[in-house]
Length: 358
Image (cartoon, rainbow, N blue to C red; front, side):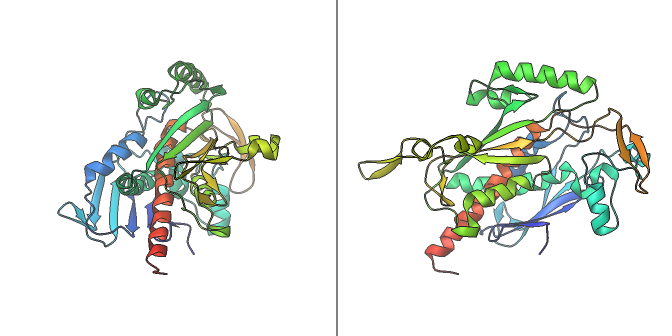
């Protein structure tokens, strides 16, 4: 078992570190004949790449993807697809002064105790930069899902303590926060910029909605669809919580309030509401899948903090370098990618079940 592999039938393996020569992934389980190009993948990577606005890190990476294998004459061959993204704008010297000091909120302590070695440059393997490989793989999954009329949309509904109250789908990609509420977005961005000037960061909440999902995705007991989605979301370093449908509000409801009552319309069975978030008993109901993830504030901040050295001595640290004062807008394409990987894997399980190929 390895923590670098995700999925069972649509499987990805990611590799690389923040300040290494490159990051990338290998994808197995893609059928032959799918039309795919670097351009298809690049448009998703461009949504995640750094340096897009004042509220993201100013590290300049083009995140240009290279298809190394698995595609011939513009179509997948059915063999593993290898994707490579080269790192070009590393500033490893920014970390040399603090290489023997634990950065609060980072993975260094756990990595060092587990492996006996840790790449301190930008967080190494634990860096959010690793998620670019996931987005690249997710771009392929999203293209397959689109053929099945399944669409995934994520957006920021809260950050810096300010909530969005309006929803305009067309507004999401028009502001750097990726918030569907134009007025709320402006207020949030201003607040993020104020925190950034102080050397601090903020967190927020991202909502994900999936439309066009067929009934029946997900496996009983241990393979529940929401369990698989939860694992996918919580594998993203900045994510600290998840809720589906009404989420924690269910704890304040009665059974009669919480249950999504059903009714028949012609030959269709429909639901009057969707507090379950489109999944009941671990299996999709055909309704929209709706869930939200809690994003913690970026750990790398320039405010002075108390910490300890790798030798256990108390000290203080002031982190230099280029970091996101709010990671939420860049989490949006990552969350979409991980959702796509889970759903495509579930679709392939259903296909195997129908064909009795177990």
